[in-house]
Image (cartoon, rainbow, N blue to C red):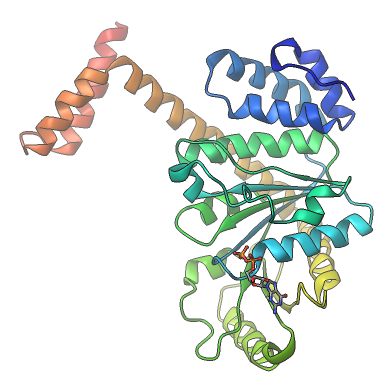
Length: 332
Ligand code: GDP
């Protein structure tokens, strides 16, 4: 396989390489998307535009759960099961901790080792620094690249903290929450909002002495779900039990996802949700562009006004309005 230096790849080569499933070119294109250089960003935009008609043909699967719940072991086991069905799997990550450390939840090479080596799988750590918004924006575009490269299932992993779950929910078709069956009140510690976002629940590590508490937890979750209002999607979330060690329950997870896809495609929700996500992403992009523009154009003014807000000379709202007024003056 030919190895290109980034500079020598033009848009046509990127396009051709991605459409033929060349993962070296795919990885280079992802680097281009994650780049903060203006020239790279323009090239990335042009590439996405060219590939857009070839996107959309995957199921986008969001997976979350607290650290230690068994996410990476589960994703590897599910991924290997899917490759046994000849599905092409991409695993991406949105990881808020990587923003601080510039590391990544997928950065540890020992994670998902077997899946990483599989010819039908592609695993990409999220290595973008910057804001969660920036990572989210890049990940949305990476999903499109992976779809153009022919991946059937795209898994976006996130750790169960902060805003990242909402971010991943907003870019995926099916959102899966992994949970542990504890001894006490199973529902404690999981925010109701996260439960309401999930299309499916998987109790992990259901092997040996965990089996009995898991069945109790399953019944509790099923009961709790009945208290929620029926969803507009026509889909009723399911609670399954799995063990990544014994592989029990793994095929059932895939059956659930396929059922979701056929139910929500029939009701029209599947396509509607994707359209809403695109519109949301557009608005988010506008917000970000405006913020960048303002920061770029009026750095000194922002610093000066921030000082006045700090010393209580100005209210935050008035200070914000003054920025807008100043920019309007600059334009006229
Ligand atoms: P993550 O932090 O959510 O990605 O969790 P990991 O996949 O790294 O797993 C955390 C720990 O749980 C590891 O020690 C795994 O070996 C263990 N584990 C993962 N899946 C299973 C399982 O199905 N059964 C049992 N008994 N342990 C598991």
